[in-house]
Image (cartoon, rainbow, N blue to C red; front, side, top):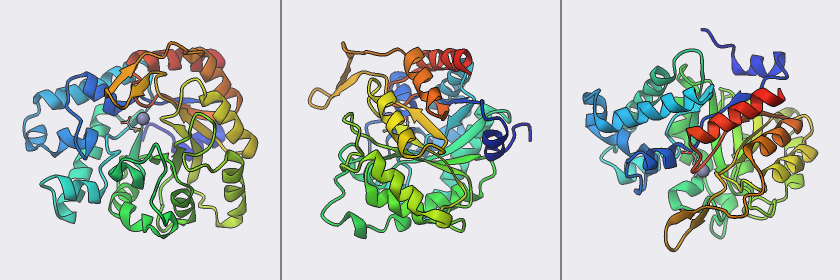
Length: 325
Ligand code: MET
Ligand SMILES: [Zn+2]
């Protein structure tokens, strides 16, 4: 294998910062794929023609997207599996059984590896429990969030990602609720046997969507002591306000000074939930150059973009990473 195991790279090359890709779901939408459905950006992979016809339009779009992110400088890229839990897929697509689901996810992972080659790192992404009920930006997990069986929800996707050698890292993205965070943190190496990270969904006022502060999150992680899963490699934020993201990451760094961090904010545009369109943010206070420098200064080791960030954004991230490392 050409690439070093990620854990080793993070330890042995402390100045290395990896450039992540951008917002795949929104980028696929920009390129003409209709993603408005319950499995979101995983939809093209559910179509048989994606696998049977190697020159199908949708397949070319996904290949082109990976290519353009790599040309922009991305060296760690994601599978398009944010909303591909067994529950979401089996309830909303013709794929109903565990073997068929496993087959679908294996094909997606192996296809993504083919797209990015052996030199780059591949993350198997997992959206939060809230993604299947669209509440990853509110964190409202109902009256008893502590009694949700998170493990049961994640298990089929996790078991597959754990065992597929094409994946270097598992990414839990956009986690908005502290009970879900605690559940993931309670899983040991038998449940999470591959390196993983957790991306938090943080309000622009700096607290987790459910109101938990970064300091409280720091205490939860410190409190794990030797029960902490050694595969937890990084903690960070994703799909958060572009302008506020450096402040948020800095507060996470103050809470956990030794933790390697990751950050991939939104583009800085603002979503109008009524008109369902993205508007340019006239108050975009920062440039990628500024935010990337601040991320690096507080210990970020993986930096990229989330929703509405494109290869052009990743090129700016990559230039800033080169400048400041
Ligand atoms: C709602 S956050 C989405 C994250 C996902 N990795 C994507 O960009 O497709
Ligand atoms: Zn996002």
